Each structure stands twice: as C-alpha cells, then as structure tokens.
Amino acid sequence: AEDQALEWVLCAERKGVVVKPHISGKPGYALDEIIRTAKKLGPSGMIAMASQSGPMSSVILGSLTRQVLREAPCPVLVLHPHQEK
Image (cartoon, rainbow, N blue to C red; front, side, top):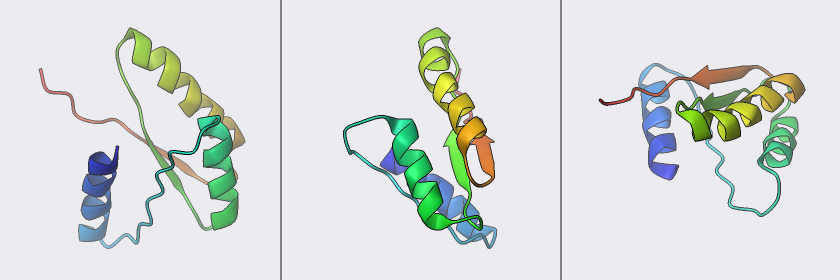
C-alpha cells in the first residue's frame, strides 16, 4: 500500500497537485478511519481510493469504496489501477 501511495503522490506532484497521503494500520473499520481523517482535513480535502477487480476484491473493497462515496464529507476520486495481463 505504501509503495502504491508513493507512486500516486509522485504522479500528482509532477502535475502540480499537493498531496498528503495517509496510511493507517490502526485496528478497526477502514471506513471509520477514512471518514475520521477526511473530517480532520475539512472540505478542502479529497479522498483518493483504488478500485479493485476480481470476485473477492470487488466484494470487499468495492463495498468500502461505495460506503466512502456515500459518507465522505469531501470529494472522492476513485482510481482504476492498470492491470498487467
């Protein structure tokens, strides 16, 4: 997750976007931590999340993405990572 986040940060910075990544290993529900962090950033913040494909990933992470989209107090960007075949 940290390596992927660093790639996104570097890509955004090359395009002039200021990014402050947040990766948490705290126990608990991911949704609660994402929303809590977004509220700290305020309305000028934005959440960027990666979508996943595949049956199990879609069920677990797709559900989280949908919940974040519904509850976020700020814009949410859903990234679709490139998949190598």
